[in-house]
Image (cartoon, rainbow, N blue to C red; front, top):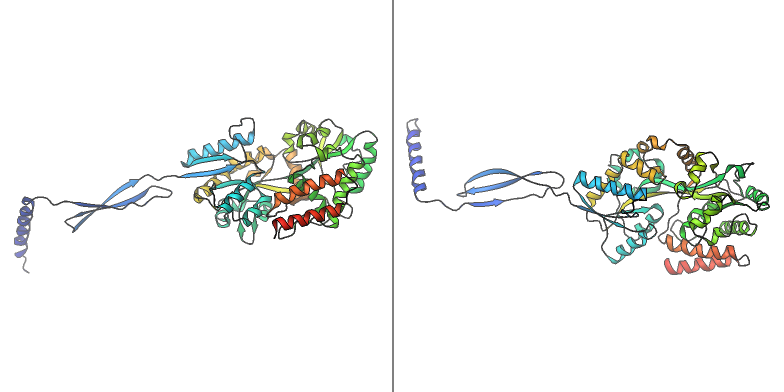
Length: 458
């Protein structure tokens, strides 16, 4: 084609365009494609088709929706007297403000959480996304199909390398993780220094010696809660059994109640009551009534927990003045050392979670040291990360002694798919056995174990 032909063709093209314009305008078809954004604003492509030949690309912006999150927790967020409730509300408010994620929170009592979640999972009912849970209930919920494995999400989190070994050893098993602990807490024995000039008794023999001396003065060696509740067994009886190298449950979660070491442990309690080494309220009272003898100084020691520092009247002041110290737990005859139970309060995702990503976002937000440190402090526990523990609020003697106690004497709580059911039944039986010295301990335990196996482990 010669160069002269080009202008002629251009003129022809212009004339044809004018003719088409004179004939009217055809309908324009618009096709929109919108991609739903997840975490940030995204570019959305809109295609405008003209005469089905010419395409024009335009860009529009669509605001991202942050979504929601449903949480079941232990604390009443309207209670301004409870520092834990106050901080949880502040944390949730800050999370919502910084992420735009709407949080729906429901309070569930700590001793009812596991049962409520397990029933919902088994019935296919409505479940929250995220729950607070004690470590001892996790395995039972896993067996009930109620929790999600969050191993990968936690391992890829910014705080994973900062978690302490106890938290990891507790919650990571065979490459699976169903919870992440926020702080470590456990049992502690507090004792009045002046009551024990020879030092706090740490063996069964020493308890017997101190008992003979103090009972003559109308005083008790110690007081503790050993009533009809699963926590009484987990915090009181289990450590005695552990001191003898035994357990309350087998690896498959079945009760292991008919052992010689269980017999020795219950017999020790029975003898302590009979010889007035401990007050009767230890086995018949509630939590606060069992602490009263220590408060009025008729009992030289009290078994509580890290949390007792704020709950036992006058304890904090007596500790800070040096009047009270933290002692080692007793070991029964033949045992290598005494133990205290050690636990974590954790976050876990349910198997019915509809907002998994937002749940992980909340956990990451919670593990910021600026959030985690005061949360552990409000529970008088040891934070689960080294960064949070470095906060100056943990520089007190109480935390130094607590960390030392839990490091030397801590024993992880046992687990079972029917932990509450078995431990509640054991608590009722033990109370009866201790108060009635003529009852056959092994016969009662054998009867109880058979009933539990038939009811829950068929």
